[in-house]
Image (cartoon, rainbow, N blue to C red; front, top):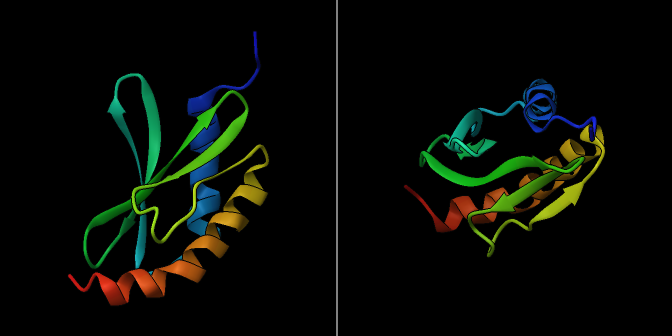
Length: 103
C-alpha cells in the first residue's frame, strides 16, 4: 500500500548508524517500547542514559530527544542524510551533555 515499512526502514538504518557514528561513548539499540512502535535508542554508554530515540514514520526518519536542552529533534526522509544530521547534532552537543551529567 505505502511501500515504506517502518521496521524494515529502521533495520536498514541501524548498520548505517553503527558505521557512520562509531563511538565508544554511544550505543544504538533496536528495541520495542510498546508493541506498537519499533525504535532505535541512542544510549550514552558512560551514564547508560537514553539520549533519544529514532523511529520511522510514513516514509520519514525521526529523531526525538530525551534531553531537549542538549539535542534537537529533527526529521528527514533520506537515511544517509538523517544519519549525517544525527552525527552533527551529537558531535555538537555531546560534550556539553557530558560535562553537565557526569554519571
